[in-house]
Image (cartoon, rainbow, N blue to C red; front, side, top):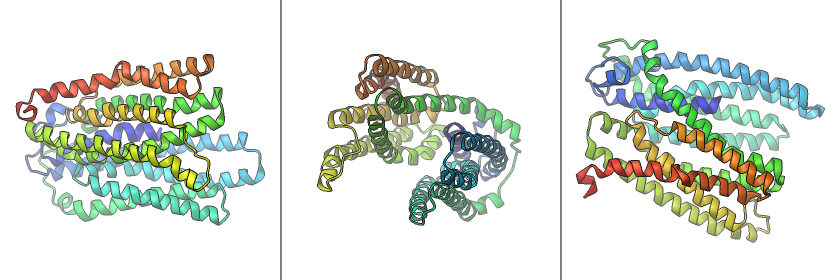
Length: 403
């Protein structure tokens, strides 16, 4: 539920905040009444923050209660060890409170990123992750057991929430306080404008989750836990590399939205191509270092390498790069135009990968190669070429960029 909310509603809010920050006058075409021509449009942003704050607060309460009840039932029915059971009950409140703060922080993240603070938001997220790791390790060193996981999660959520709140108060408060308000953006109008793109975002998140999670689940069920662990750890490392490589595109998102709204086509394509090239070069560089050094590092310290063997790992890295290329890199250009054209493709691809993985792993006993074959073939059949081709088609219509 948190994944769908963060992956669906939050980027939609971020993009609309970018429109407001650009002082766009054509918001009526997106479902929001025409706003002031002031740039940035602090009046719209102020009302936007208020409406989304209460929306996410309600979402946070409902999600926290549902997930809290589900976890409580799981502990009661499945955790039989007394020590682990007691620690789990102590961990539960910290986890639920952390989940609550992460959800109500989502509009703050979207507003900060949409109003030109993408780099600051990324730094806050990195700092919160470091705090999570330090808190968890310190709690484990203090023999708190499972409680340390909930304590680390809660500390991470608090850092994210209050750091973004301080940033908004310090850098945006002056504009919000003196905000011009020519027209009032009612909550129903804002939700009406957000919902069409939000549910499409959420469905693509479900498709991406199916693709990423199906491999580990299939290997754990039908192969060995060791192979599932190796595949899962390799996926986590590649996810980190993908996140780092996508920083430039995420940082450029507000400027891309502003250029799109202001119909500055040359600037839009120049910014996009710059972020695109940097993303590709960084991923290739980091993945090359990872593939080259990872085996040697574990050999030097006489440790067993927790990743896949070289050729499966190289194949997985290639597949991940192609998905990163057609997803975060190419999809960003569509999102600036308030379009999510890849919803059905994401859902059908996720379904096809699950079915193909089951056949290749369970019926044909291909193991991890079955997961890689299913994922690579399905993505190559459509997504790997379709969305890059549409991006190139749009870029090729701009003469100056083409030259």
